[in-house]
Image 1 (spheres, helix red, strand yellow):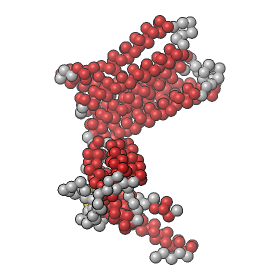
Image 2 (cartoon, chains in turn purple, brown):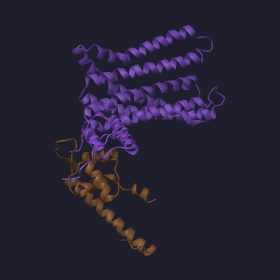
Image 3 (tube, one colour):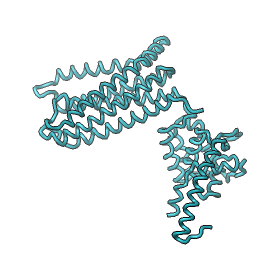
Length: 297
Length: 108
């Protein structure tokens, strides 16, 4: 065994910051290596490079977690909750895209790329919604049965949010539209308000099952099936997002006759949001899929 | 330029090479790597490497009475290190020979 003896323990602001940087790591990683890293910091001290190194290495610890550390069902549940949030954001963006383009009948003649993008978008959204329903419903029923059996009212409320929230939102929108609509429709500010309210509703829609997953901690085949389905749903919704970007760019380039589509800022806003939500969905789905496979012996 | 080239040093390989001597804890590994190989491993890099090597079964932790847990090379780790060392030796031989022929450098 090595006889390397550490020098006198040093204490400094940098060491305190380096210890704080450990909070950036996943809990399982901290539980396994946290004490050892703190001991190393005690022995060797810390400087800016140490803090930066610890902070930087936290990212791969999240993205590519070491498999001997984590609880696989917990990893799948965590990935499912994140995929659901990112997928819901993508679905909300897809709805906005469809409302502003396809629902307005915007298909510039002589530009088949836009028409193909619409077709890919429609097919991908359909497959994605079906995958999410097919994978999510058995898990949802499993959790709902358990919540009912154990009289967990809060969890039942969380689980009912994907049912209740869209109904409440659509009812509110329909009533408001009926009240404020004039000859040209509802106007841009009301439309914007519906979008903002819609994304708030989507957040609640996705947060409910996510919280229920965290509290009820289901295990078994339903979680595995849901994680697989979530991956399919994430990939296809990402494809829909990519198709919508192609169509939006096509409209921007080739449809100056349509009011508003020659302006760059909606595209500049839409594109990063789709990319961000798509990346979050893809990374989380990949983590879920990785957790399905047992660790090598 | 030499400092930049030092960054090519592969941290997992450095840790495996350090543990080929005897089991060591984190601080002892950083000291050994710095003293014998001239590379300073930060805490973040070291434990990122240790977690990956442990996950792949190339090193294993030993029991420890305090927070300084030592690690040792496994048979798989020794094999991986031997294979990589062989490759590096081959690269070094080629590099030395070409430097000698084309630049007249006589490496020590």
